[in-house]
Amino acid sequence: MRSPIDIYIFIPIIIKTGLGIFLPVSGLRTMLIDIGAGVGGLTLANFLHHLNDDCSKEKTSTGGRLLKSSSNAFAQHFGGILFTLLVVIIPFFKMPVMALANVPGSKLVLESVIWGIGVILTTIILNSVDSAGKSQKDICAGAISASRIMISLIVFGLACVFQFYTI
Image (cartoon, rainbow, N blue to C red; front, top):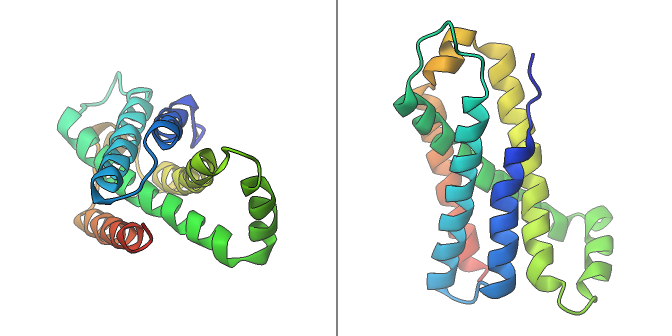
C-alpha cells in the first residue's frame, strides 16, 4: 500500500499562504479568489498524486482521474475549513493559536497554515479509504461513486457558506 500523502499536498498550502500574505480575505471577491486558489491547488495536487499510481498494466482515464481529483479537492477544502472552525472552538487548540496570533504579521499566515493542517488530515483519510477499499483497476480508472461526488459538493457548499458568513 502506498503512502496516503505526498509532497504535492504542499502546493495548495503554499499557494493559499502566499495569497493570504498578499491578498487577505476582506470581501466576496477575495473570498472567491481564495476558494478558487485553494480548490485549484488541491485539484492539481490530487491529480499529481494520482499520476504516481502504478498504472502501467491498467487502463487509465484522465477524465476520471480529474473528476476524482476535483471531488477530493472539494472534500479537502471542507476539511480545512472544519479544522479552522475546530481550532477556534476547542480550547486545547485555541490557546496556542491565540498566542501565535499576537506575533506581528502572523494572522495573515496563521489561518492558511491551520487550513493546511486540516487539508492534510482530510487527505490522509480520503487516500487511506481509497487505498483500502479500491482495486488497482478502479484507482487507475479514477472510479468514484456518485454519492461521494454529491457529498463532496454538499460539504464544499457548506464550507463556502461558512466562509461567506465569517468574512
